[in-house]
Image 1 (cartoon, one colour):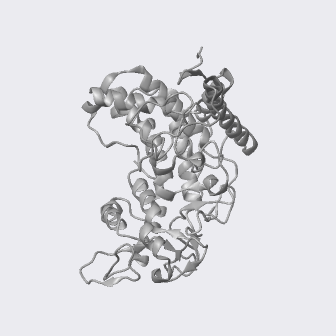
Image 2 (cartoon, rainbow, N blue to C red; image 1 turned 135 degrees about the horizontal axis):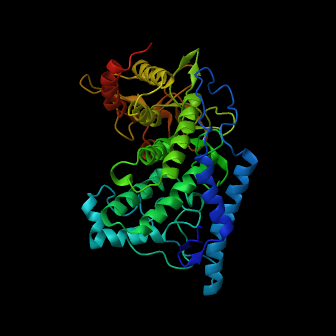
Image 3 (cartoon, helix red, strand yellow; image 1 turned 180 degrees about the horizontal axis):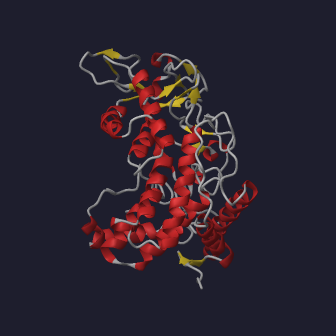
Length: 413
């Protein structure tokens, strides 16, 4: 029998633990693997592909949010304080995350991992832009620096911590890391929408945070974790058979969602939006300058992931070829762009580049600003947004080189 977990000196009630545990067991149940049908595109809402319905999903989200809030409220009451102090902020997590396995067994590695453990929310995730190398979270302190992103999958949060925990466990054998990993994995499984996608943050926070999110490689990052768990290789050999099966089924549903959100224009598959509506699956708007569109930056990471799949189905193969074809049609040659510039510069030796966003239908590069305005020329965007946002990218070049090799062994049928 499972016993209640102790996190940050506050015991998680059995009811919450049961929710997390059931999410793992439900995902591992047989017969839930969705069947991808390429004709069902973003124009066609998905049927339920999960044993849990939307009402139950929203209820779990609400319950976990209340539990997270209750933990901090109890700590503040005990300290006779009204407001939680914020931890130190940083752009990412405050330390270099790409460490050799030996680092995790070092004094410094263990110190950092203790801090990471202390910032795991009662619901099982982590925040972004929170320094997890400076000091342990203290009672009465918030779990993150931004209210709308605690916990979140945005900017690599939670997926990064899960990968670090797996390495730390391999290096040390410390069961605390395996326990924290199990809770984080359970949150990922619980957060997955009935149709297979993931919101930006979970428990849900409303607004564009609830969209199925490809932005900043969020979907790709979570699918990478699931793929690692499903195969249980290298630093993931410690996962249980139930966790493996749960990851397989969750990944299958995620892939189904990826296929069904790939945008079709004039009968042709293209790529994906930066975010998609959780119910209709249509490309959706996020911040004022992130309009409904096709995105080259975010789609490239999904294309890269799909090419790494073992024995991809015909549907996946078709998806990859279609996305690569869109990149070829949409590339800009002989031009270069420096962030902040009002136009592209001529450079016959420059590698191909792509606008970050393309208008659906015309496939014209499109740009937005903080006032919700949409423009077809980068020079019409305010200087603040030209300097503060990556409007062009060359990242697809490397992935298209990989595609050229991949396509030889995965021809269209």
